[in-house]
Length: 144
Image: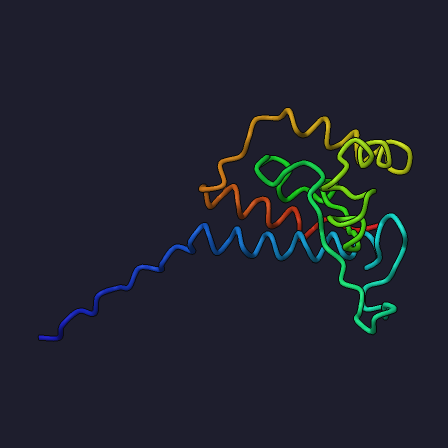
């Protein structure tokens, strides 16, 4: 008599793994959307600086990542050089009032979207189906 082989259950992908992949996809889409240059000064990624180093651009969440509804929303991302992200007088981290004013003057559509989305009910980021849905939507999103 032959022994029956046990069927192996397909392991479910960990939600942490899906969220990591979603964040990488979000970062890639934000870079594409802004043309791989700082949204404020237009400096290109990899351009040489005076000290010989190359420009590194950061993807910044306009509304904090803690807001689950906006965490992976393309409109909630902006690409910034170090000066406009964290270190300059006119930066998104050091001067939130200035950043909102800049967005209002240059990208009111993005600011409007963030304001609307921030009041929606939060997603359950521990639900695989929700994460898969967000991932599929982000993959289908077109950039500029």
